[in-house]
Image (cartoon, rainbow over all chains, first blue to last red; front, side):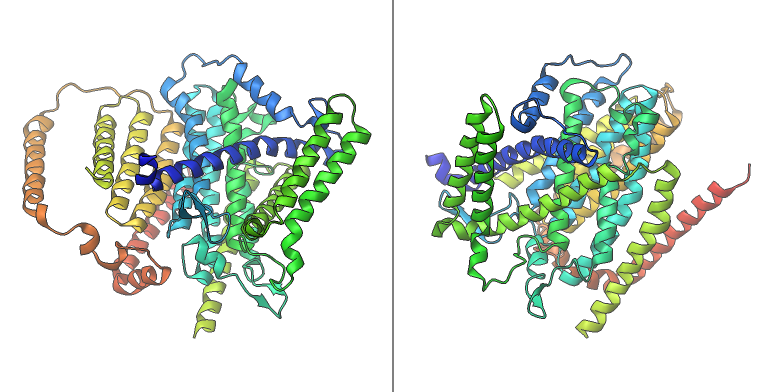
Length: 401
Length: 170
């Protein structure tokens, strides 16, 4: 205990990292399930159904499968770089999440008041870009070190694409920076509090709608997602940069991609959607019970579904999960808890909404051709982001005068 | 030994080790990776001195943009393992004395400046404490406007040069 009281900051940080890591890894696994389900329904299929109720155990099965598969290193591969690439991709993707504030104020852990982010950095936005900008290496090095032609082409495509779209991504964010006047995530969110005409939330989404659209498009390309998933275009490049990867190294690339999706969505939430701010008026007290309401309704639906539609073990497991959800929902109405859950609830809801858009885009849009991709990035996205920047600075200048 | 000092030695060691392996690696990609490692370690050292902005920009610009292009070119040309020429006369008669002189010079100034203030206190508001966008833009667009513009023109020249080279008819 002596150690704990003397090094409280270290211990609390480690605890927070462990909790966030657990949550993020679970979320990653279920994001794959979510994506498969949504894309399947867009394409009039059912998606995973056999592994557990509604295929809910599919991520677990996939994870186990990846772990036990044979790990092949192609002959002629550069071993050191070959192993480094997936590690780099995954660790950088996870590290970026440490900077995201999931809620306002502080919570008390071990008697210490701590913000709801692992690291509260005043230059948060810059450091986030610093971490994500190194992420290119994972893909590029994977392509090179496999010593095979398709991965190399995929890696080359990917580095060119990521450099091109990073410019637009960064420029589209500068408008928000100008309006907030700070790199600090908390100040950026605070600058979006308040309302226009008494009911429209002052989120950056409305004045910066062009910036938001540029950001979201560039983010799709940055994370190598459809319709910009050229580095892994299966019709041309087999599987692109990770063709030669197998077993858990292959899984790490996928986890990195999904972690990047979460990071990018979190950043969009902070910058454009008001972060953890509630869209509803703070004078409406019933709005505080929305998280509980959602959880309880979800729990009831799970119980009904389990008892009436399922067979076998699922008839027990699903109602049990429903009861747990209802219990958590009731816990969220307690006076000490209800205030704490508001911020994270709205934050996660917005992130979830953006992730759904991601999946939606993948389910509906066809992949671009490579020259279309470059044309789009340099000849459309970049000028629009630049124009948005110029107009925003002009308006900020005139308003502040 | 306090935590910052410990971190300094760890990352200084990484920087020096990275720089050495940059020189001794035979494979061009390994050299490039070592250079990235040096840049990241330097960024941490800047951060330890309280220069958060410079640290972040170091990573974004050097490690995240310039080195990506290096790696890209090495991959595109598929540069093979370097051949070592055995002994360069220039390196022996000029290089070694120059290296000794450089190290001696650095050691001399470091020994003299050992009691000087930490960098964070000397270099003013940009280094110490949280940086607001206002401070930053005041420095960039007022105090250092001329160097800033000169740099922009330099980069513009490079861009034009690239366009001319790429457009040349075969």
